[in-house]
Amino acid sequence: MYRALITACLLLVTSHALAQSVKWVASVRPIALLMEELSGGLDVEITTLLPKGATPHDYALKPSDLRAIQLADQVVWLGPGSEPYLKKIISKARQSLSWQQLEGIHNLAMRGSMQEDGHDDHHHHGHDHDDETADPHFWFSVENALLLAKALERQLAQQHPDWKLALQKNLSQLTQSLRQQQKEIHQLLAVKPQPFMLAHDAYQYLEHDLGVQSTASVVLDPEIKPGVKHIMQLKHMVREQGVACVVTDPMVSSELLMKIDPHGKLTQVSIDPLAWDFEGRAFSVWLSSVYVKMTLCATAAD
Image 1 (cartoon, rainbow, N blue to C red):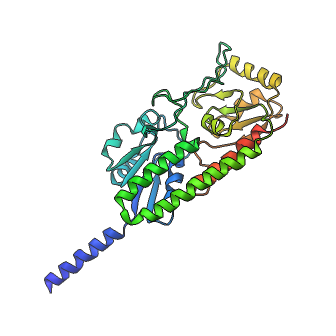
Image 2 (image 1 turned 45 degrees about the vertical axis):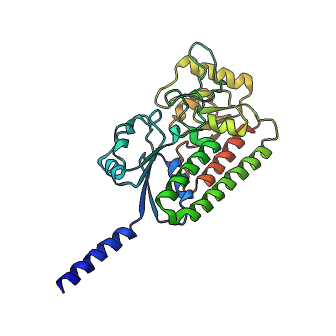
Image 3 (image 1 turned 120 degrees about the horizontal axis):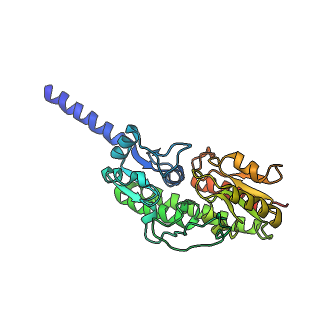
């Protein structure tokens, strides 16, 4: 009887372990949304490290974050150039995947803004650059999103062969949704885009995908306030170029925009680059909403 009891306990523990959800950790919410959509219908528990209101540049990990990373079956992060705070701890993960270090990733160089000396290199579009010099907001690129989704699908299918068909189906639907959205939004942008500006220069990949281009940005980094000369240059640009809309960012102070547009003439369209303004759980749906917002701003009349 004693042996039978021990065997029953072991079977109970084993069955409980097998029934536990697979645990994934995403460093930022856009990655979590992509993982949610790819794993639809599968027993997966996804945790996002970076909380609302924080930036990936200098976030301080909490003890609960460290435990989540160590216990996760898979950790997906942007990469060492974009998330230096994860460089040391990522080695403790059972399995990790760096988005920015995937072969074939499309990295655009960081753009300048209208600098204090009056030089405007905001229109410069880079191509492939290393982790340290690339614009870190590469999740706004459909090609980059699909690159990560395909890499995850391959890796997870190897780890969980019984998931292979479900993962392939989800990846196919994700790909179809993103491609269809691109096609529809380009039809909406058939009219000539109007001059618009950005509160935070975080949407270069999105502009690249949509075929539009902002005239300038208020800040390159929300944590660094622009100088008085820069603000005056922006006010002049808005007036002379007929800028009608600004894409706002929750991390950029509304007081800065009031200095540029004191009478509230500019149409404001809000986009959270870290997706905390989106209540859904699908990357393609979130990106579709971002497409619509950017299109509204790019076609706003003065």
